[in-house]
Length: 213
Ligand code: 3PG
Image (cartoon, rainbow, N blue to C red; front, side, top):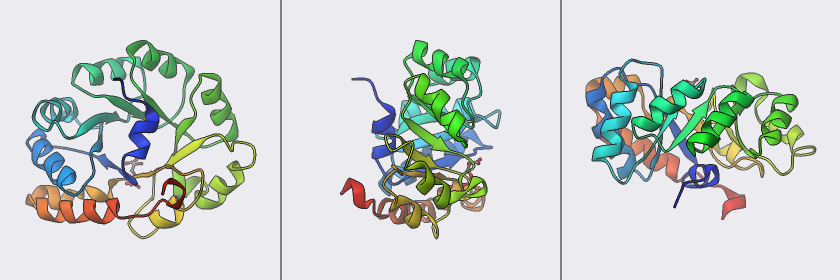
């Protein structure tokens, strides 16, 4: 059964945005997040180690669902798919990327920050969107404004979201989940402090989504 973008955003209140400089961290990190209840993992294509990291998680951590982040075009999506990614996240929206992902049968969570970009994504049949960069572009106030014209769209705000502002976003009816890098802090990765990461995941998993309960 193929995964949908809705499956990706419904699974947990937070999608961790992961930047790995050491592919050796991939498996213990994924195991630590899964132990805390977080299975949808976005590995950003920002480091040369990203594809190896995805491959390792896809092969060795079957409970995790590995996705690729920072996907900017069809070539990125194809490389991610070959490395085992099962969904892709992009910082922005282009019709070209939407079509490439459709051809590859990869669920796409594309970044949008304006009404026009939401409309362009809807033109491609997409209704579950990342709001990026969320806190910088307007945060909860902008999400509330979009509830009027775009009441049929679900968002995953990402960018500037942290443990202390996630709950307020998750209470909005058009927020499915949030994304953020705080679940995989560089310091914990460098120290191999997997327990700290499991604790962060557990706290994230415990955030409430009143409209999904
Ligand atoms: C990013 O661009 O790295 C993601 O949007 C995560 O942003 P954050 O570090 O503000 O969570």
